[in-house]
Image (cartoon, rainbow, N blue to C red; front, side):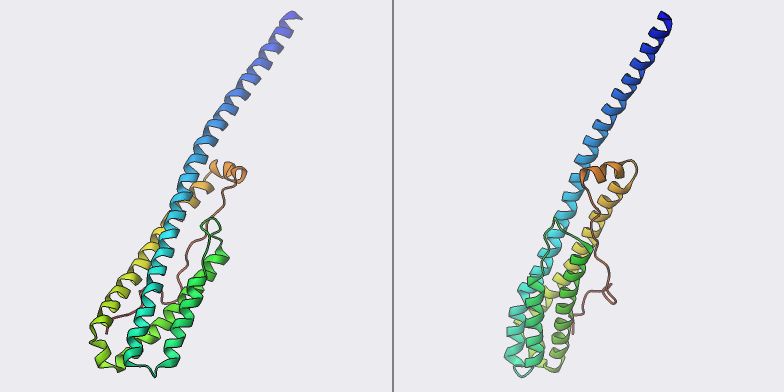
Length: 204
């Protein structure tokens, strides 16, 4: 009977040891998972801030562009007002980096696409004004705008890449178990709109 009790105590101790080892493993894995997830999430948020910065750079160029065009084509009032209105809508549509939901990303994209459309219409209008096309200020703004549009595409791609790394990490097993416990959620990506695979044409 004593042997049975000893054997029972031995088995109980073994179970306790196994539980302690598994618990320690879970704590260590959870600690490492959390730190890496935080790092990847921060990288994605930083990439998002660069996206917003690129779009803001474009918005900053527009007042001077409108002013320059207006000097040669003041009667294009409807087109100029369309750009100003679209810029206003785009600049007031912002997203907190900690709240990058698919709905808010879509809202942000819609506002920016509205500005892209108005801007493209304005630039096409310039084709009718040879003197404006030769204006030094306009040519400089045109060059800056083209560079900014390219920069927007680059920052959007880098943001999506950063989100992809983060999302894959928190979805892979067994990390996904810790992700739900620790509050890590999937982040939204930019989705291409029809025709958005190319930067808007700004050359004439």
